[in-house]
Image 1 (cartoon, one colour):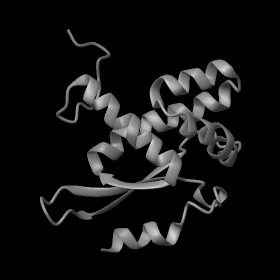
Image 2 (cartoon, helix red, strand yellow):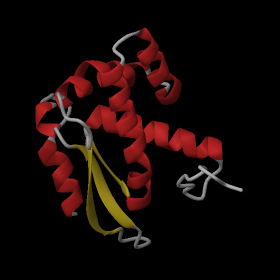
Image 3 (cartoon, rainbow, N blue to C red):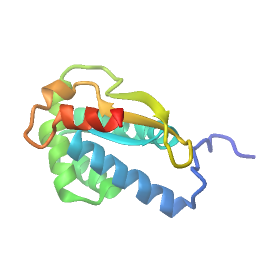
Amino acid sequence: MRHRRKTVRLQRKDGHRRSLLANQACALIEHGRIRTTLAKAKALRPIAEKLITLTKKEDGVHARRMAFRFLRQKDSVKRLFDTVAPAVGDRPGGFCRITKLGPRPSDSAPMAFIEWVDLENLADDDIDIEDTAAEGEE
């Protein structure tokens, strides 16, 4: 029986899926918003929200090591703890937003933006909201 084994498989083996989601989580942490397929965005949202919850519950070495265990990039872990987590403030949950876009021209796959809800609080030079919004209009 498959009790409590619910996961979005994305037609990939376990290791490939974990690497894909870790890389997308790092890109989301770095850029604040990424454009991907709807299925991948829906698979990424619980992972990204659990990482934020981890930073809010524990603010120590153990939490950083647990985040690094999944992300595997030191700069993403540092940005997660130093920039992204303080920006969400006292929000109890719902840190990510998925915005549906039209189908991709090549294969008609449904596309979506996944972004932090408090993107305005992450006012950094490398996060440019207008540039990423222009990508979605193409």
